[in-house]
Image (cartoon, rainbow, N blue to C red; front, side, top):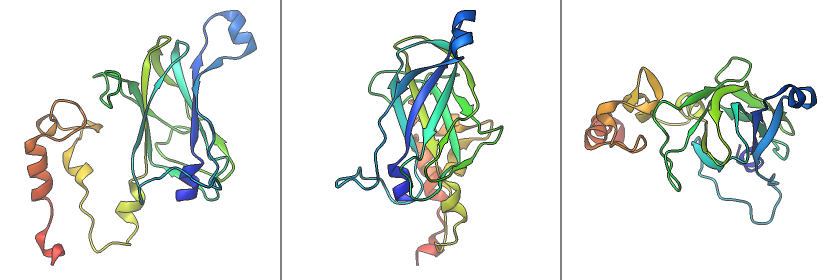
Amino acid sequence: MKKAMLALAGALLLATSGQAAERLSPWVSAWSTGLVSSETEKPPTWPEGPFVIREVVRLTAGGPRVRLRLSNAFGTAPLRIDAAHVALSAAPASAAIVAGSDRKVTFDGREAVVIPAGAVWLPDPVTLPVKALDRLAVSLTLPAALRASGAFDAVVDLDAITRDPANPSRLKAEYDSGDLLHPSPAGYRAMAAAIPLAVLK
């Protein structure tokens, strides 16, 4: 899985407006990143196991809809994405997002996708009006493997404990420190209380 993640790269496509633009192509590139081969001498360091990547990107164009383009072109194994979201970034150099701007990204209507090695994938378009130079936060997740792998004696799902049932991509209000990212003291207490001490013996 690590080699597949090293090959993950992306692009943001924006829906164009105007009949002339539509005749040429309904999408234009607004941001992209280079592909990184897993065979490079000094590959990027990724944490072990499932994790969330949040990339804040600066758009070069605007439009009424956005669409991701995900690549596993250099991957040597399938890449599973369990959830993806896009949202407007709240501030420069911040992982926080603008309240109400979070949008779920789906893959042919499904929340998860497995991108084969060597493949490029286009998720479904997302309705989110953006302007040129807007900052967009793109979040990709892999939690299911950890929860259901059976490789551990026990799993405490802190995400399930602290998330808002009405909006699972966000913390419960009482567990939010105020930045939409880090838990409050009450959130940390809830996480600590959820750990069964018996499994630590």
